[in-house]
Image (cartoon, rainbow, N blue to C red; front, side):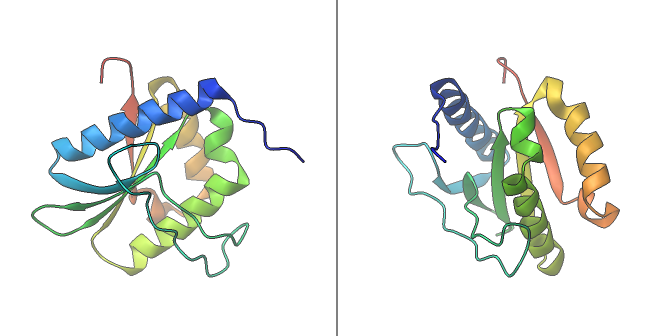
Length: 144
């Protein structure tokens, strides 16, 4: 199967990564790594002990809060399929489990503001209620 690259989706993801990084910086997070940026290294891969597709996962952004030292994991989703596919479900399982086991880990997810209701409906059916609070949704809008 050939991996087809969609330039519109790639450009949208790149823009959303930059917007999420700006949002995190505004709440005093030092963004250490991010995909689709020229000035930062790419985030490290997280090992996967057996969730979903069992592949290692790379968040879009990694950062550390300047005062508390808490770890911030940033993810972006450009379309509905991006937050419901197997890769995303594996990421939610992996990152929320890490966050539940280790204090001081925050998961920030940016998606289009008109997709938030769909995402909330999906995630409340997919994840155990104890894990919902570990994902902070940031609305993407052109005015951000």
